[in-house]
Length: 59
Image 1: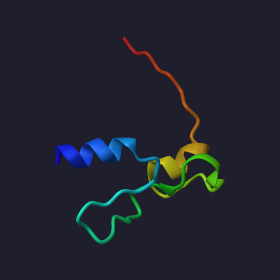
Image 2 (image 1 turned 60 degrees about the vertical axis):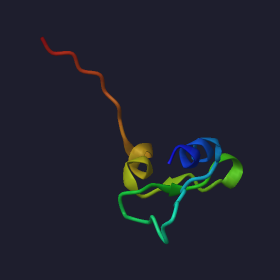
Image 3 (image 1 turned 90 degrees about the vertical axis):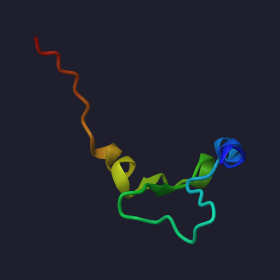
Image 4 (image 1 turned 180 degrees about the horizontal axis):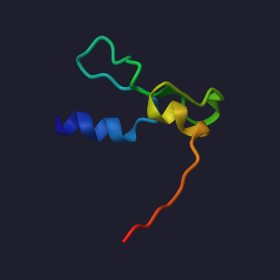
């Protein structure tokens, strides 16, 4: 596990699977890094372009 984490942190990819066939889910973001041009789809990251962030302080 430590060796896997070492390499996973250095990869510049959208999805990494280790000893597994598929990691796709409607809850996982799908997309590329750098100049892929597709951005993020699915999951919370896919919805982010539609978010309007607001900071609220209540005491």
